[in-house]
Length: 95
Image (tube, rainbow, N blue to C red):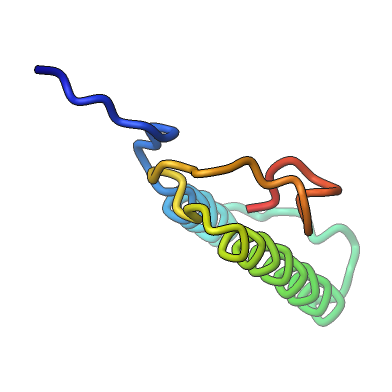
């Protein structure tokens, strides 16, 4: 008897994919002379920090909306409903 599994069939959790890309970027920065966009390091670091915080805000807003609707946050678990409120009013997939 075959077991039916509902869900997105995600092979690698998205945070691992993100961390892999981040690691590649860090290695590339140290091995190559990458351009600095003509900005001072303090401006680049402040801009990067602001973007990181905004990314976390969007991520937590999406997860909170999922939890309020009672559906799975993890992409390899079955979803019980389609979420179209909260942050999902403006974007299809913020997480």
